[in-house]
Amino acid sequence: MPTPTPSADRPRRVALLGSTGSVGTSTLDVARHLPDRVKIVGLAANSKWEQLADQCRAFKPRIAVICDPKVYKRADRAFFPKETELLCGEDGVRRLVADADVDVVVSAVVGAAGLTGTWAALDAGKTVALANKETLVVGGPLVTELAAKRGAKLLPVDSEHSAIFQALTGHTAADVSRVVLTASGGPFRGKRRADLEDVTPEQALKHPTWQMGPKITIDSATLMNKALEVIEARWLFDLRAEQIDVIVHPESVVHSFVEFADGSVLAQLSPPDMRLPIQLALLHPERVSGPAKRLDWRALSALCFEQADRDTFAALDLGFEVARTGGTCGAVLNAANEAAVGRFLARDLAFLDIARCCRAVLDSHDYEPRPALERLIALDAWARQEVGRWTPTRTPAR
Image (cartoon, rainbow, N blue to C red; front, side, top):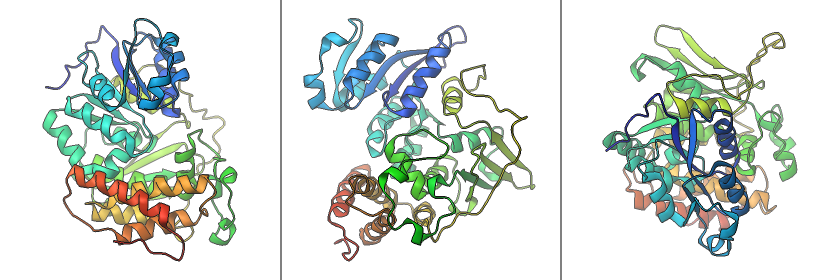
């Protein structure tokens, strides 16, 4: 049974998965500023147990989970408050998200690892504030079918999908001509392929607008982040790939817009501050004053838009292809990208080879149009293995 709608006279009770990441710490900042509206009842982190313990002392959650079993064994229980029960691993995450005291689960774990907690939360009928786009990239139709079956809700936290969600309020997919996701362009906007042959991790990690973790920052530099967002939008809003477009908007003020069948266009504007879409997902449909920055119209001189360079940033076309094809492609692309970004950060792969490697692995996998979850998990492992073996002169084995 779905969790009952919280009453207006008590705060939303929130379980936060990925509490030590950038979205997780922003979520805690929202809770800190809105203690009468948001109560943290559970926290989960992978390996940063000292930071998790600090968070527990600050928010006094009833449950905390250390997802890495090895880290759990060496964590000092004395650092955690006595009122917090410390759990371990995927079983601990499942227990946390299914707890009767949880109204909203924030899924902020980076990468495909976030699928487990999101799936368990939806299976328990919870409202999920989804910052983990990989959940829908990997298992889009399975995830949305589970949510519908359990009466659970998926509310987007990504700024682009939150903008679309807000613009679509009161409308259905049938009213929509197209949605346009905006992209900052990352640190290499305007560069050509020849300019990027010798890019270093340090250069790629210097994002001009957003402060994010290393993986998503590299994804923004390659535009793979936007490719994954195209796939997420396809499933989240029940759209065709042909109804989705991407445009570069370096100011990151217009977070996306929707063009309707009658030609009207609705956009959502705000400063680049993740606390706003987080707060909206936590409190939906309420809107209250919070910690997010306000738009200064006096300082806003221009809003610029330009077409994405798909020749230089080849990752973008992979996203549209996977959104059209579906099936096993999302799981393979996501896993290949995670592994390729890891190799790039380790200086074992060139920047432009990230997309090339993903293309090779995607092209070589055994495609299935309607895979079971177990098959997607198996292909995730296969794709990572193939990326580890890939070189620019070698095609992965089927």
